[in-house]
Length: 460
Image 1 (tube, rainbow, N blue to C red):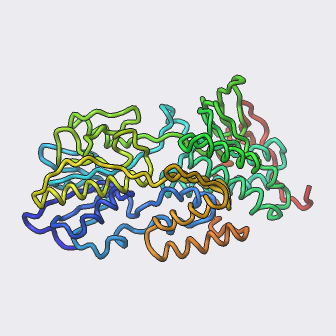
Image 2 (image 1 turned 45 degrees about the vertical axis):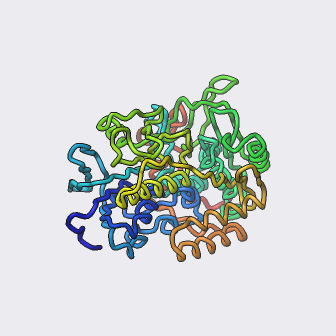
Image 3 (image 1 turned 180 degrees about the horizontal axis):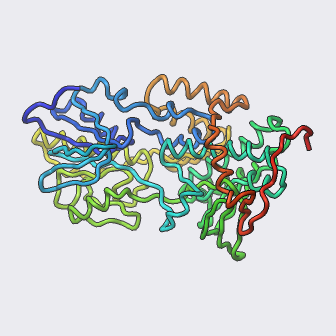
């Protein structure tokens, strides 16, 4: 990377998700020096995280290095760090990385720090029901999902086997539906006959949501189609259910029928997002308002009130009820970059951001997806083929597209999952959570003697 030139316009971009990365790329030929600050060294293609968690793709295929993506863009410096503060008077941002803190000055600032998982005020749920917002999350879930089958194979207590073979997904939006569908396919199509003492086809996959519809943003027609397909796959869809408690061995829900406990060792949280802490600090520094999810309410041109040099884009901004999807981040990032370039050319700025909805898609199972594009609705195989094409288009890098297609062929045409690695520590850490004393384990609200796990020589 080139050293920033004296007197050149300095742009700091916070976050290398869709918004930050596309804003940076849009400034490639502009007379500016860009400093891109991100908490990891990779760009994450979040829509496919669930495929890492269920063993279809490797993390490298959806998380290419930022430096590799921008290696030919000479006006960019990439820095590892988490931005913790913004001084709007001095026009500096402060970032921290392990063992170091540094400050970077800016003339224009684009904040695209994304969103974090929301537990709606119950952050204690995270320990036993992890979300899916990062590579670390996906790898943790992979260990829990595949580890559940391994530990069920070792158990002799039928009650414990049922707990290991019950998977609960909270949230019936696209992420939850996709995750539930893949766990069901894994259990019913990939894993049968690979275990000798358990029948993976006995797996229960339960999809919970407090709302009364799956994929509610897709409209009644596609929502009904998706629900029908989920039922065909054997997934238990429980709507109007509010989660009120989560522990190591189960989940507590308030249902229309009353309070219920579901015994399950593997819970996955796919409900709700919230703005990161930086949004609140930036709003306080600028006097901007935030919405219920903590997102910053921006002007129509994505700038903060009273600060035309600061842009908030993507999941961090609240504007015209726009959804927190990749296309909003991409387009708003490009819009912010365009406003900066117009300002440097002496042209009028302040043009409102105009979002072009390119549709919404969610896959349910192999050969089955739903897609809403304008007024046109697709489902089944056509929706699935559209889903494949669009996700390949937005994956970064030819190599990643090629290897992704190969992995999809293995999983969707064949029955394999080429990325099933779960470490010994991941698997047995799950069982250790049950231990409450020597020879005693916890089962829901009861404690019982730990079942022996001798070497088994005869199949049941």
